[in-house]
Amino acid sequence: MKTAPSTEKTIPTLKHKKMPEIVRLELTNTCNLQCPHCRHHSPEKKQPENYPEYYKNPTSMTEAQVDAIIDEVAPHKPSITLNVANEPMIAPTFRYAVKKVKDAGLSGTFNTNGLSINEAIAHLLVDTKYDSINVSVDAATPETLKLARGITALDVLVRNVETLVRVRGDKQFPRIGTTFVITDYNHHELPAFLEFWKKRIDVVRVTGYIKDGRPDVSYIPGWTREMLPERVPCKQIFRDIVIRANGEVTPCVITAENPDNIVLGNVFTDGGVGAVWNAAPMQRLRDLHNTGKWDEISFCGPCDYWVETFNFKEEVKDGFLVRTPSPYTTFYNVIEKMENWDKKKLHDRQGTEVEMDA
Ligand code: SF4
Image (tube, rainbow, N blue to C red; front, side):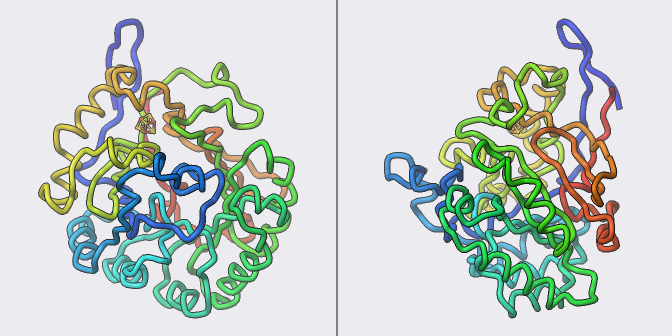
C-alpha cells in the first residue's frame, strides 16, 4: 500500500486485482415493479422521453453467456451478485445462473423485490446452498410500502420471506436479509422494521437513498456534505465489475443509471471480463482516482458514493452486530444468526474490505 502525491496533499491509493473481486451480473434489464424511488424503472423514468434506449429493448443473458462469464472468472473466486438495475428472478436464466454460480464453487448473492419467491425458488436456493439473498422491503407499514415500491402488499412480502425461512429450516443457507432504503418518508419506521425482522431473518441492510443523477449524501436524513471525511479514491472501480444484460460494462452501480452513455467495453465482444477489466478505459478511471483527479471524470466529481471506500466500523447494539462504512450502508447482523456468515468467503458486500492508507 502506498500514497500518491497530489498538488496539495498525499492521498491513499488503491490497487486492483487481475480479476474483479465482485462480479455484478444483470441477467435481464427489466423489472416487474415501478418503484417510485427507483433510478431506473420508476413511472417517471419510464416516460418515453426519460427512459434510456437500453431499457426500451428488453434484453436477457443467455445460458451460454452466463457460462462464458462464470467459467472465465471462476478460477479467481470472485463473489457473484446476480442483479444490477433489475429484478433477477424474472430473468429466463435466473435458475440456471444460481446453479452455475454454485457448481463453479463461487459465493453468490442478489437483491430481489421478493414478489417471485415461492416454494420452488426457495427449494432451489436452499438445495444449491446459495449464499445470501436480500429482499427489498423499505417499509414497516403498507402505506409506506406504497410510497417506496408502489404496492401495498406488505403481507405478501413477509409471507414470501417466511417461505424462504421455513424451507431453509435447520439448514444454514441462504443467509436471508431484508433491505431498507432510508428516505425522508420512511426513516421513522426503521426502529419498527429492525424489531420486526430481527425475529425472523439473519440480517437487515439499511441503504442511503441515492438521488437521481448522482449520490448526494445530504439526501440521507441527518447528513450534510460538510460532514464527509477527506475524499479518497472510490473502491467501486478497483473491486467490482458491473456487467449489463447485453455484456456492456459500466464503471459502477451508480453509473448504471446512464446505460446509453457510460460504457467502458463489452465482455461478449471485447475479449471477456479480464480484457475489459484491465483495458485502458477502466485503468484511466483508476489512475485519475489514485492521483486525486476525480473531478476530471464527469460522473465521479459530484458523486458522494466514494465514501463507501472506508472499511467497516463495528458495534454491538440491541442484539445486532452493526457494521457500517458510511452513511450509505449499515448492516444489522442478528447476533444469534451469524453462523451462516463467512466474512472470508466474500459472499456479500460486508466481506469486501479494501486496504487503504489512513
Ligand atoms: S465516485 Fe461515484 S461515479 Fe465514480 S466510480 Fe465511485 S461510485 Fe461510481
